[in-house]
Length: 345
Image (spheres, one colour):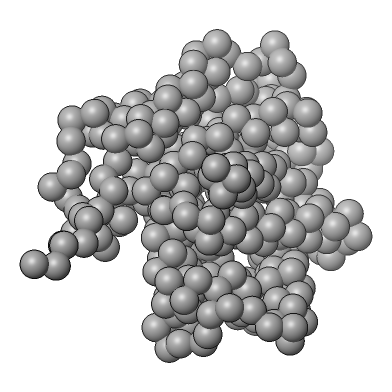
C-alpha cells in the first residue's frame, strides 16, 4: 500500500512540475524575445539536475547497471523530451498562449502514449469501446479548449502605429486587418508546434520505461541519459544556430532565470516519472494521469502568473478542460495493460 501511495506522489510531482512548465517558460521567452535562447537555458538546467547530480550520486552506488539497450532507449527518451520542449517554445514564439497550448499538448499526448504503448506491447486487441470513447473525449476537449481559449488584446507596437499613420490610414481601421493577417499566418505554425510537442511527449513515457527496464530498474542512469540528450539538442544545437538563423533576441537575467526555472521543473518532472515507474507504475497508467492533471495545474498557474483575467475565461473553455481530464481518466481506466506472460506448461 505504501508503494502505491509513493507512486501516486511521484505522479503528482510530475503533473505539478509539467503543469507549471509552460507558464514559466512563457515568461522566459517573452523576456528574451527568442525561441532559441530559452531552449538553451532549459538544456542547461537539465544538464545540472539530470547529469551532474546523478553522476555525483552514482559514485555512492545504485542498483542496476549500464547496458547498450538501456542507454539507447533512455537517450531516445531524452530526444523525445527535448523535441517536445522545443515544440512548446515554438508554439509560444508563434503567438500561442500557455493557457491553451499546454492543454492541447497534454490532451493529445496520452493518446499517443497509449497507442505507442499498445504497439510496443502488441496489445492493440485490447483497445475496447470505452477506451476509444476516452480518446474521443480527449480530442473533443482539446478542440473545445482551442476554440474557446481566453482572448487577450495586445496594443499595436509603436513602430507599427507610426507606419500606419505615415501611410495616411486610420490606426483603428488598419490595425484589425493587419492583426487578422498575422493571426491567420501564425495559427498553422502554432498547431504544427503543438503537434510536435504532443507526439514527442506522448512517446516519452513508453520509451523511458523501456530504457529503465533495460538498465534493470536504475533510476539515476536513465535520468543521466535524458540529461545528456537535452544538453546535445537543447544547448549545443541552438547555440550553433543563433547566428545562422539571425536570432534577434537578447540575454537578460530575468529571462534566463525564468527559463532555467522551467528547465528545472521539466527535469524534476522527469525524475518523478522515473520514480513512478520504479514504484510499479506503467506507461499505460502513469502518463495519462500526468497528462490529465497537468492542464488543470497549467491553467491555475497561468491565471495566477499571467495577465489573463478571470472574467475572460469562458465557461466552455473550462468545460473543455474538464472533458480533457475526463477523457484522460477514461483512457487510464480502460487502456490496454499488455498481455500477461504465458504460464509454463
